[in-house]
Image (spheres, rainbow, N blue to C red):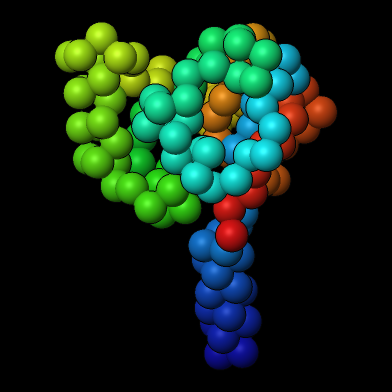
Length: 139
């Protein structure tokens, strides 16, 4: 009986830790953005800001499938998945830009951002390594 309670408490703690996991916005080391706050991240993902401070083109990556990291990122920028799809569709139809490249996993985001000049994406903080730089962290 005690073992069941221990397992239940462990499962609850693991779920709580997953829900509280921080999401970070990462960039290729070539990205020259400064003063990156939430508003700037919103403008980048809304395609209002298309270039870094030194003029390099920003290349965005997004997670294809819904998961906790994607949900936390969208919550952080105050937009829903459907809101962003509408923004990107409007930009594409008017010739103002293209939707981010959607990839299957956070590991794919990390690899793509690390290897693509001008790239920006988001992943769980626990996955960050020295191949990228952190622009911002969710609250």
